[in-house]
Length: 331
Image (cartoon, rainbow, N blue to C red; front, side, top):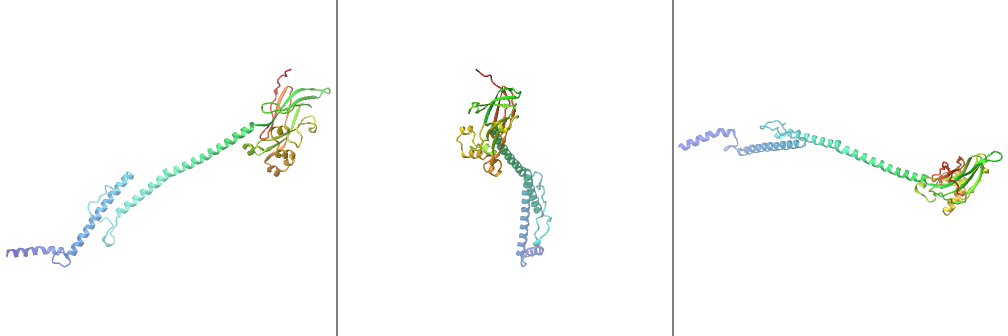
């Protein structure tokens, strides 16, 4: 009988627990409700530990990237409902969302600062270096061109020496000047027979015809057009008519000095034969590469016992050098 009383008391004591937990033994569906309760507890614990792991990872990443942003100290002390409820009893992860937004913002700012502070200045520097390299290349090319042009300016294509042998008045009291005209090479050696002539007055003109070719022919050293051409037409003084001057080279013919240096070609023959046709027809002159074609008559006031040189540069300038004293004649 004692055992029956104990069993009766145990059942009476378990009735309140059965009322609190409807899924207990003796109630229909008790095992099913208890399973749902365990499932909710398990999901809550999983969400909590997942949330704690995510916060810890974001905190460590923030400390590593900037050294300033940190969420490592933010720890929930217990399960509090700080997130907005969603349908189905779940909660929206506000803290995780905010942390993700901050992380994206930090990454975007890092990319922007990297572009502005590193990539953009580097590109600007590279563009500047390329521009400077282009400028240097152009300057080098211009330097080479100027050096070539300077060599051309120093080159003499035709040279003649004028020696003032005598200067004095004749029986009528007029001043007479006697000169010796000699064409020479670069070393000063005569290349043809000298000619002596006496002219009235002191100012003497050296009438020439000059053909100048385009500069690029000269710079490239073209065999036909790589220098200027000149004809000594005549020599006269200021007190006489040009038509009465002393003829040096015949009109329409290739000067003897050019014929002796190289075989006369049809190109040069045609230039001298049709000199005035080219001089008065721009299209015709351009077809031959002629830049300028004209007469040129520099003059000098000659002094006795002086030596002058008349030079034709390869660019077409006809110049007369200052006079130097003649060397004494050796008998």
